Image (cartoon, rainbow, N blue to C red; front, side, top):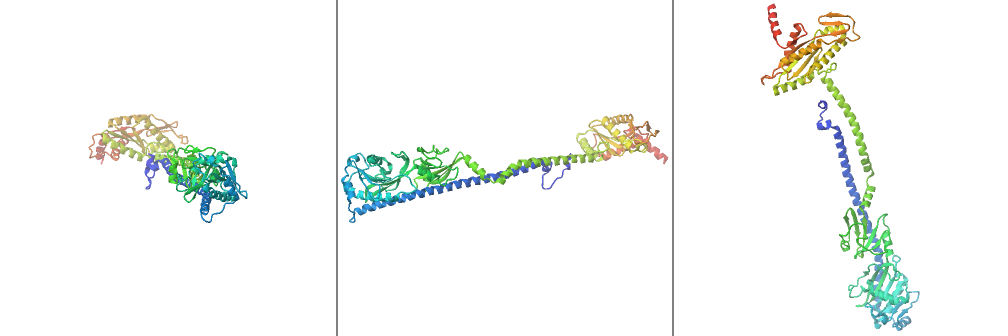
Length: 594
């Protein structure tokens, strides 16, 4: 019933007012959902920003490596061009005459091992005889060309000795002549000459520069290999040298694998691990540890990338791949034979995303459950308070505060429901109108406090005597009414008689502050501070067979019961009247007197 007292706002559904807890939870859920959407968007942007930063950093590192290696490639190309220019000069009328060192080396050309020492501590030319070249497919002794080859080798040796080698690259620089000699910086032991030439005949950076395998005369990057002397892992950059159309040798620069590691680690972010891989799938360098053995793709890289082959990465050049939450970033500089790879595991990415997230948003997320709990507590207390207050107001509006019975207003509401049901179901309905006899004298002799105790006693007897479905009410003053659903006139009269007898047997002790005068007067006995009283009752019935076009109303039913109550009072009180016989007898007497 209290819900009918709640306001009905124009801009809110009534259910929101009746269920404020749901409204609060719904509002907090909406806020939480909104912050979740914002957080997911923030996480997405942070993830994209993090991946872009890592990719950009990888591109810069690739360009840095490319810049260092490109410088070596340019120097190597310069040495190759310089050597070919020297061959052109020696084939022209401006050819330089052989000096004593060249003639001496030429005279020793058939010895098992021979060398041509050079001044200024330049590395010497070291060669072998024709017998030692037997079986080496990439070498061929041509005496007619040997003098020109010695001149070019001497000039290149001066370049190597004067610092053609870059400070950025570690390893060896070599000129290897197809005529069976070489010059190396740093210098090597001449006793190693035969083994060195056998080694050159088998390594890709020399064999792959022959006209059959490199007709375009391109610079070649050799795969990672182990040096046969130091066993250190390295790669070699080489360029072929031609005299006209004749292949005359190779200029090569060795790059140690440890230097590749240093280039890869330079300017790397903390925690970032990068990999350098060639097109064959060999991981040449790792940013956080030296590579002691060649590891192959994809086992050398964290994550599951077996569906991607190295050739795909080289073809695409640059990009980002995702698999099982992990990200693989790769970039290849334009002329580089390697691709740089950065693997970002899912855990590392999420940790970085959380570290970059908005702190106020995280604080809001942390505080929302606490704020929801506080708000629900406040709303619950306020709502319970107002509900209790509403129920109290409802009770005051519908109950008589003294007796606890329904008041006249509530009786009208209940009677309306009962009459509608009576018409719908065709059941009888009865009404009792009750009045306390000589109640004014009770108040006059014993005071209003004692009169109130009489009213309370009547209400208590009504509840005890009537059925649970009967509806007693105090209509005002000492007047009471009882609505009896599904009750005929005779049954109602019996109930009224039973009530009258119960009231007559009641004794109410006077209020302690009332006077002690004992008297018996007009049906009210008062002695020993005990009050006895009686009631008069008028009974009316709304029969079940009332025509639909003449419905019974509470006022009509009450008028009949009031008339019979009046008859009971005028014919001696302390009685029940359920018909109009007394009223019909009194009318002729009044007419005769008139």
